[in-house]
Image 1 (spheres, rainbow, N blue to C red):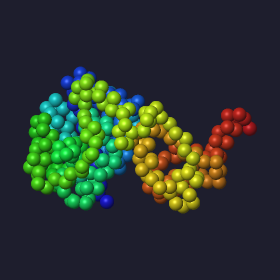
Image 2 (image 1 turned 90 degrees about the vertical axis):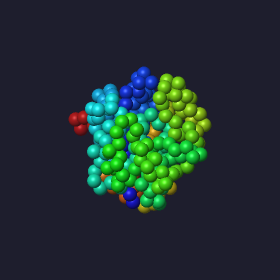
Image 3 (image 1 turned 180 degrees about the horizontal axis):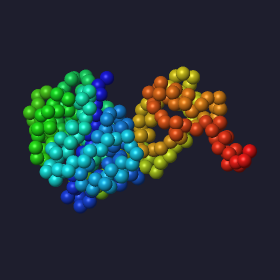
Image 4 (image 1 turned 135 degrees about the vertical axis):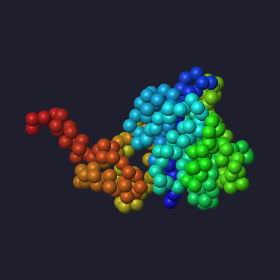
Length: 293
């Protein structure tokens, strides 16, 4: 399996919008945090967020997410400087990187996974989505192209390489063009807000109102030693949507560490702070009621 990083370009000044698009609200969180969650849910690692304009506020918007941040002090010189900063942060053992814009909130994690799958299938140096022949972002660049990508200057980003390697590119067809739209103006943002509650193929009505879940484990997430179908995708979806959760059980015979180990075997790493057993709940209740007992 290929190791693909994510580079989230979030340094621009948003001059046409009139305020930092990184901090626009989307599903009850800042846009940059939403796109970072999508990258994490897709399994990209590491995820590097390149900062510039309003860096302090954007870094705070990312909160405790497991991403790396890098400051582009030259962000006013164009997109290529952010690409260079992002490339410099990547470890030497990755196979490629997907470059994401912070103003495409409708790009789903599944599309990022499809880009990676297409890369593994074809070995193409560049993979990008397309709709009826129209190329779009985000774009996956293979590691051998990193030196050429770092040499690009100005505000062109990776477009130079897309032209240079046009005959070697692999594409992923996207049926719904709305998934690829971005935000440049206040009118773009208004239209996207309308799309958020429309009948997109993957949309669930009023999902943005859900912030927390309490999820039973035994018999729900697995049966015996068999995980429920779609278990990994379910947790990736929660992360993509920014929905927090507690995993609960009325089984007092096992420690939280045992549940965490079981989930890890199923490909779902979860911290102990997300697991609550009936033994823990009982101990907390008794401690609150009889602190001296």
